[in-house]
Image (cartoon, rainbow, N blue to C red; front, side, top):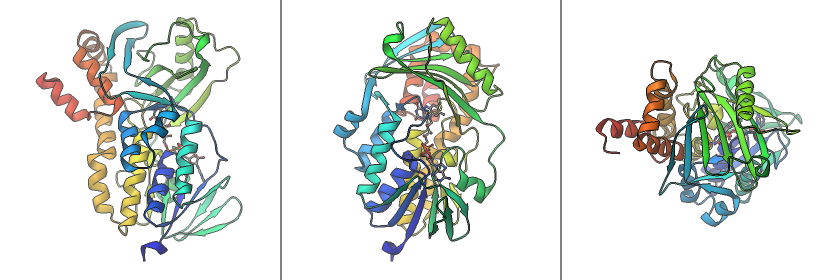
Length: 373
Ligand SMILES: Cc1cc2nc3c(=O)[nH]c(=O)nc-3n(C[C@H](O)[C@H](O)[C@H](O)COP(=O)(O)OP(=O)(O)OC[C@H]3O[C@@H](n4cnc5c(N)ncnc54)[C@H](O)[C@@H]3O)c2cc1C
């Protein structure tokens, strides 16, 4: 019976590929379509948390050796800044953070979905949806029993099925520059608060290139303000972007779909708003939600268990980030947060643990309160 289930996954980013891989591995008939031809790029800082890496390896979707090959650089050191004032550098003994290139990483995951038995069609856009079928850009009609909207921040599946989500949008701008053109940022991950409300400027070195960007979530900052924060940072660092092109993309902002869809329609990754509202991390949540949705479908549409597990994992974590972001970014507590990061290694470690995905917000807060961290 289960083998006859046809699942249509719309979107072949980390959410869609992980979902299709798991479904096909369990023998569920599954078709994935993506509007892009692969390999395709995605505007992203390229940070892969140790939690995201653990999910991929533990599931068996990719091996450690394969992930190592996809990894451009592994970081253990983070420097935290208030604009150009260095607050603290922190080096972690464990839970490294990898830098991956989304072009190669996403393509690899999509290929894994294909080799596990999912049918993959690229260059095909979902253009209309009714209760049992989807029409695509090449006028193909695809019947489905379940549909998984894994079609990113501007999700067509979500908009068509559940209406527009939220009023706020997050946005990120970034340059990918050769490391040789950036002299004073070579070591570790750099995070600069203070350039933007509810956001930050980052510099994440890879093997030969560095991603320098600025982004906000749930912020009043307009796209031009985010772009000018990035410009200000480059000027402060005397970095010339030369002829390199700045790229921008939306980040889901305070738009969590708390049930990950309803009925036969599931939402995964950015389409469900599963992006951390402090760090902007979304790859790990995309993978986790893809796996959870696949399990729910494999077990005949068991949404209840899926939601219990999601609330303990990605959904719960994003919800916590919606609350804790105020401690770091709000006008009332920002100064205190900067002071704590400067004075206390415990706070810097807590920040590392959050972005590496090795500790939950609630655990971190309890530890800080009891000072046992
Ligand atoms: C500037 C910036 C920096 C970021 N940095 C990081 C970071 O360092 N680390 C991190 O973890 N996260 C980061 N994120 C977030 C991360 O990129 C996303 O959370 C992640 O890509 C979500 O994966 P996904 O599979 O849900 O969506 P996506 O990766 O966006 O994939 C969606 C796919 O759906 C396809 N699609 C869309 N519409 C249709 C349609 N109608 N029909 C068919 N296909 C369709 C698209 O072509 C795309 O391939 C960043 C985001 C931004 C904007």
